[in-house]
Length: 413
Image 1 (cartoon, rainbow, N blue to C red):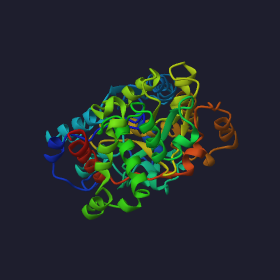
Image 2 (image 1 turned 180 degrees about the vertical axis):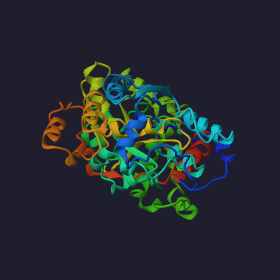
Image 3 (image 1 turned 45 degrees about the vertical axis):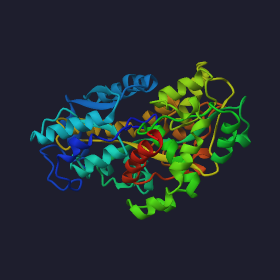
């Protein structure tokens, strides 16, 4: 995901997942002659000399630079070699693990760690792919608020120690303040009223693009008064009631979208290029922290600003998970712990605008000051502003259904 700027963009192929017997995460005994994360000295001893194969979205060059220049050297100091396997679709990594399970490969797997969340994590839980009961034992887990619902659950699925948090994503509305006033982005109704008066200047990517799916959910939250109507596990009656007129409303606004809604961008990257080129003036993002860099680099206009509509914004965390057949589980533990190091979190925040997955109030006074001292772009909302109206994600089964119904009831109409 995802992300968010997030890597976990698409759900794993149903044919592959459906071929497996579904079971609860951690229900089978893990293949572990490998050290337990609660015995960290043994983990470090075992990890020394290992190479960890980290499958992750590779399209963010600023993030890749942090991986190369900050994370990899820290791992090398501990005797671990980091091999970043760059992918465009997290489902590719999960499908690889599924294929190994189908082939009976219970150890020596090619995938040691995956940047993941949402539907892909849920699919792996159902297919019993993940090593579990380790993430709370990481030394740096002391910096994580494990009771935060967006940390203890991942799109409605209990984490159960099967993945470790490493970054936070919050949605926001990005707009050109030379074209829109704050009143125009105070709510989604106001945004759509502006779009009606300025047709073609707003759009969102087609789900199942991760950000496109979020944009649709943001509009749904606004239409239903928030996520409460769809809280908890998937309920058909609740879903039908909440979306009774929703897709008709989305069809109604199509004529005011970019290209009259006859086509949708296929990715968030495409949407951002439209904004950079001046073809649109507003869009939803899962990576508000990265907007300032685009302004500083001259990609986006200096008049770029962000807003949180009255219905709130959607927030989640990104995680790292470890397949239970991973060849180098100890090295993967070390990677997961390194990602939660406050100085690594700070480096990510400085270089990419990625918001910390840890709770910085649990760090030292010096570290908190270092975060506070990071220059704040006038184009970007602070984490405090983003957190004020943050709304939880829906359960992954709702996401799958929304994406399916958007395709059949909006895109194909």
